[in-house]
Length: 271
Image 1 (cartoon, rainbow, N blue to C red):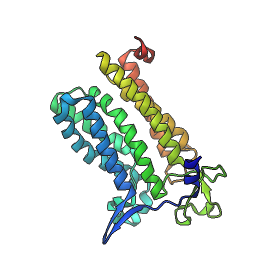
Image 2 (tube, rainbow, N blue to C red):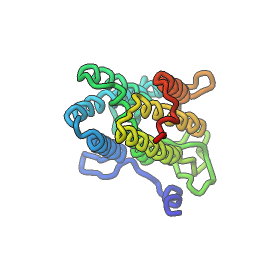
Image 3 (cartoon, rainbow, N blue to C red):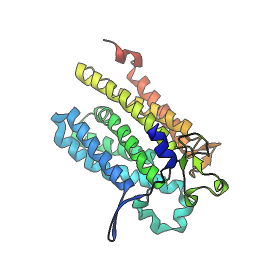
């Protein structure tokens, strides 16, 4: 399969284009494309709230990004404690999706209160867009050689430069493409969430929080199991990686939202 051959043989580089002193990084380009695509899809789904959603995206971009960066820096605290200026080198990569979600939720909460719009309506509307943006953004991690797993001999294993490998794996060449596993998983979750959202909006039977709760549960389950493969550094608490602890919290939160709505999930597919 061509895609597997590409992953197995191509050596990705973080910089797409060099323009004098300016460099265009794959990571930044893909994040920008994800944001623009997300805004386009949201406006298509809710054209009557165009101005409110455009304003909301501006705030989400700022505070979601801050949350994502803070989460990542916290995970790599020993390094950034020794290299404080590197905190601002965002072009080198380093964003944590859980931080973005937390920053986004807080932004949604205060924005919804200020504009007197249902928080759950906004959360449900944005959930499919968020997971699609995550899927696209994972390719930015690929070009930065950030999200990979243990060594493997599988035909889709990806080469990792020595400088980016943990020291105990210097004699290996190919590693699990965890970014790709998450990319595929995120696309599947997006398809489910988008179907769920369209079904509710088209029938005018929108169950508040259902889509957002499913996003929390499904993505957290995916991330929890993928964490067993990943080699990037994260604090370990109670024998679980930090990302897994956040995944457990997200699952519990999602289940609570479903329970709070007091509607079994299977009813969403009736009629």
